[in-house]
Length: 248
Image (cartoon, rainbow, N blue to C red; front, side):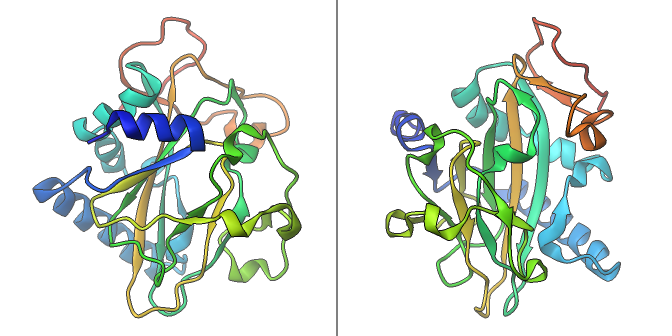
């Protein structure tokens, strides 16, 4: 499903789209499990955009991230030694789905080197109308950009973002992806998405992978979140021993 053109575009622009990754019974099984998880969490008062790291509470998500079709695709970008760093369900309900401000993922992560790839799998068709992801191609090479507190964070998925004057919105590309397709994007790529005011839900399952040569820095400014954070070696081996891993 990943073509040489995908790999070339990812290197050049920091993102690429694959219209078909998971299908058939695998996609149905994934959808049922994600929707049941969303229902439980929203019943507990949690917005469906904020379902971060579900694999820490439900081990089935580890199995979903380790599906052969997923790892085969990821391997073409980062090689055969694949570590699951994190995952995230971001589901924008119809009518009032929250905006995601312009941001870079990497500012939240203590990784050295910053070699991590995000696979965004479309559980629903992701369209302009229901708030698909938007990217600024080529910004993945700029390094970290200052993020500031945003106004009215209750109306956004993130509370920090890149100041609007630093984003050339005229270059933005809409990532329209059919159900079962996916996008890949780099950690410093500037991206975000509009709110969902349409009559159709937009649900995506984000999986974040890194090569075993990238180290999670457990001490330092972000140790509150990452000191005891579990990593999972899903394929291959860690020949450097730079990380410790949890058992599945």
